[in-house]
Picture 1: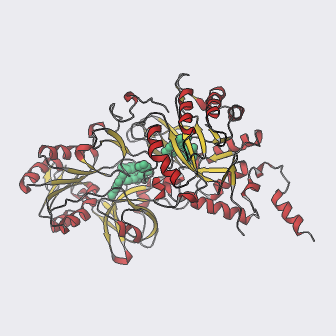
Picture 2: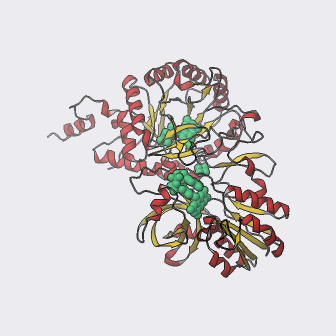
Picture 3: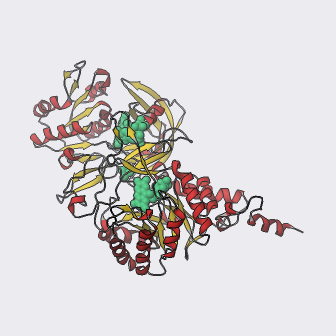
Length: 325
Length: 288
Ligand SMILES: Cc1cc2nc3c(=O)[nH]c(=O)nc-3n(C[C@H](O)[C@H](O)[C@H](O)COP(=O)(O)OP(=O)(O)OC[C@H]3O[C@@H](n4cnc5c(N)ncnc54)[C@H](O)[C@@H]3O)c2cc1C
Ligand SMILES: Cc1cc2nc3c(=O)[nH]c(=O)nc-3n(C[C@H](O)[C@H](O)[C@H](O)COP(=O)(O)O)c2cc1C
Ligand code: FES
């Protein structure tokens, strides 16, 4: 018996819940050397910016216990090159594409949305709110409910209504639920979390910070518990909002944790660096875990861990009712 | 399909010590048959429940058709990942992705080529030498290291090359000094048409300078910290001047690791040159 792995990101149906995490699969071509991208629920692009960006100096990476620090600085070719070369490549192949955008001002996000509004092949728009706000002394949008909401409201008003707008949240905040609520109130159709928490490593040979940028974003298994906590808290507060759970997913079991916490889509980032086939493997493992526990549909597992202690999972109740003579 | 990378679980066939280095021969059929000189592989380290989330990039030293296709890797145990690799024994399995990167371009017509390698960087030059010899090229080696035990491949170089010049910084083997001290006279004596080099960035910069003095092309294989090795993470970049004269931060793993030496802005490695495409000063805003 196969498990129905279809899922909905707002009103958009995905064939399965696994997507790449922004910035961890470039724009798809490299992974396409390894497998057919149609096997992904969706591909999330790196965050596209208005102008081309050269990013941060190297070294840009440092391995940490069960994690990775990165300071890439949104290197990319800018929206023009993206619309000319990268998006058409994905669109022609019919690959479900979540386009991630990043900017330093509300106007920049709006302009990006405007450029993407009529572009064919945008399945959903993910707004990377972990960029410093140029108009507010470099304070990160995602750390300020009102700043995040302003971006989302503006992007939502520009994007077509059949394209869900997803707000991507950062875990480095005192109260993620309030930021999540602000984004939903501003029109976000779904939420994505978590982006990289900030970390740092020091090279004990050079006696200097390991990254040229000094601090960087932490990813990998080290942040899985942080992601599970954020998804849990936001799902508890806003149970109707579709969530993309991201952070440290290396296996189907990790993905399953995020699903049980409330995610209906799961993003895979750092695992791709270790294993280019990670998304396919994780999808298969997740399906196996669901099947082994008697689930017929992925949807029945979303947020299931929130049920009160002692109560039986609903999908099993249905089964036992059916089997009563 | 030459070049298209694959992931394979290979079995370790043999492990050896070669001077100061470890050498592993791994059965990796899919990789061996796609391989060109200059390619590298990335190796998962630490086992199934490891805390090491990134692979280790290692050049392919040799491929052989035996046992359905083997690759040989040569490395120094420098940190936790390579130390784990050094402990592998025959019949252990290793998870490899490869072949990765752009290989060395070969001259169309028979040419005189000088191959310059420092420490384990020399390893990648031997299959290149074989390919050049097969095309009727003349091959001369300049190999160096800190001390005698760190000069890799001297014997094999002597066997296959027209001349082999060895240098050590402590004078324990060959000439005292660096490969770049010996290079000008080797180029002059052999009337070289091209230079190929694999060594630390500083040495590649000096080799390129020598090549430019003699007005001959230099192909360098660079080493940058890599998180993915397949071109998706953007951690391995360095400033390289394109055909259009524009400097871009390009990926060492996907656009490299082999570049034309004169195109690499060695003095700016580790920075974002102000005139690079998308540099903070160059019109684009510097966020995140
Ligand atoms: C294209 C290429 C080919 C290489 N070929 C060889 C080879 O043939 N023989 C050999 O001994 N070494 C080679 N290296 C260097 C080798 O990758 C590093 O020595 C090794 O990754 C260090 O891992 P570690 O766990 O021992 O050290 P750690 O410092 O613990 O490594 C931590 C992380 O940093 C990365 N890293 C650290 N040092 C380097 C480095 N110098 N280059 C790239 N990434 C690094 C590691 O891959 C890992 O992800 C090559 C590097 C590249 C980029
Ligand atoms: C190298 C790298 C680049 C990233 N670039 C982006 C980006 O452009 N936009 C974004 O929203 N998140 C970016 N992220 C964050 C990831 O999308 C993801 O939220 C985070 O890494 C946690 O997931 P993981 O542990 O599976 O990697 C990046 C992460 C890494 C490691
Ligand atoms: S190592 Fe990831 S892009 Fe080069």
